[in-house]
Length: 153
Length: 429
Image (cartoon, rainbow over all chains, first blue to last red):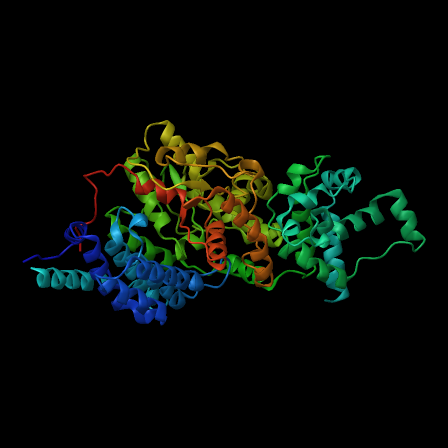
C-alpha cells in the first residue's frame, strides 16, 4: 500500500503516473476547490479530465474554456485586491492544467500543477480572514492520491 | 473642477517647463512622424492620438508664457486660454491613449523625447485633478497600504509559505547583509506566484544570498504612471530606506516594466542623491549568473517562440541583449518579430493604461498591432518579462481566439534549471 505523508512522496507518486492518470487524479484535486470559482467551465474541465477516453478535441475545448475562465477572473493591474475572487483565478488555472494538451504539458505534469494551483486557491480564500492559517489542502491531496493509488492496485 | 484646481494644475504645468521641454517645443517641426510610431494612432487612425498632440495644452502654455510671440498674442487677446474642460478632454489623450512606451521618441527627427513631455504633462493633469479614477485608486492604495492593489505583507507571506512548501526552499525575509534585495510587483504576488518560486530556485542553485524586505517589497510605482513626482518619490524612498537598512548590494526590479524605470532611472533623481546600491532588473542579474556559470540549464523548448520586449525594460531601460542571451540557453527555435528590441511595439497596456478602466476598449484596439506581429511569425509560444504585458497579451489573445501560451522568461529558465538533488522538495509536512 502506498502511503503519502510528505511532498517528496506526493510528487514522486505523481511523477510515476501516466498522463491520463495524472489528469484523472488532478481532476479530484480541482474538485475540492471548484466551488471557489462557481464557473461551469471548471466543471467541464473536471469531467473531461476524469474521462480517460476523452478525445483530443474535447481536451482542447476544455482547455480553451478553462484558460478563458482564468483570464476572465485575474486581478487587473492597479485594481483593489479581492482575494476571494482571486481564488477563482487559481481554480481556473488548476482546471486548465488537467486538460492541457500533451504537447504543452510542462516538466511538473498536470497533476502537480493542478495540486499547486488548488492550494493557491485555498490560500487565497483564507488570506483576508486568517492569513496566518495553514491551508490543509496539501494533506487532503495526499489522502486523495492514496485512495486513487489503492483503487488502481 | 474649481478655478483653484485649474490654477494648481496650470502652476504644476508651468513647473514642468524646463530647458528640455522648451527646447523640444521650439524644435518640433510638426512633421507628424510620431503619429506613425504610436500604436494608439496606427490602430485607430484618430489624429487626436498623435503623440505630440497629447501635450498640446502644455505647448500652448509654454508658447503663451515663455515666447515673445506668444506673449504678444496673449496680451492682444489672440490666444486661447487653457480651460478645465480642455484638460478634461486631454485626459483621454494623455492617459487612455498613451502607454509611455517611448516609440514616438525614437522616430522624432529632431530628437524630442515626447514620452518625457507626456510624463511632464501628466504632472499638471494630476495636480488639477484630471486623472483616471483607476489610477487615483491605485496611487492612494500605494501610498496608504504600500501596494497599488492593496496587497499587504501577510498576503505575501502566505504566498511565500506556499512556495516554501512546494520547493523546500526558504524565502528569506529581512536578512541584513544579503547580497540581493528582491522587489516584487503586486501582479506577481496575486497572479503569478510562480515568479517567486522561480527566483527562489534559481538563487538557491546559484548559491547567492537574497532577501525580501517586509517594509518595502512592492516594486511598482503608481506615482510615475499618474504623474505625481511626490508620490513617486515617497514610494522610491521606501525602497531606498529598506535597502539601506538591510545593507544589500543590489536591489532587483522584477518582471515589471515601469517598476524598473521608476527605481532604476527616475529613482535617484526623485530622491536627489545617488543610491548606495545597484539596481538591476531580474534579467540583468540572471544574465550575470549565466556569464559567471551560475545559471545552469538542461533541455530545450521544442516550440517555436518569440520574445515580446517590454518597452520600459528594453527601449527605455536598455536591457536588450540579456533576454536574448537567456532565451538562447533554452530555445532552439527562437524568432524575432519584425520590429523588436528598441523598436518593438508596445502591448498596449503600459504606463497605467491597464489600471484605467476608461481605456479598456482602446487598449484592446491597440493590441491589434501585437496580434499582427504574432500572425506574421506563426509562433507557438510568446515569452516576455513583464507581468503587465503578459496579462494584456493573454487577454488580447483570448479576445482574438488565438491559442498561444504566454510565459515569463524567469519561470521558463527555472523550468530548465539543472535540479540540485540535495534540495528537491520539502519533506516537512
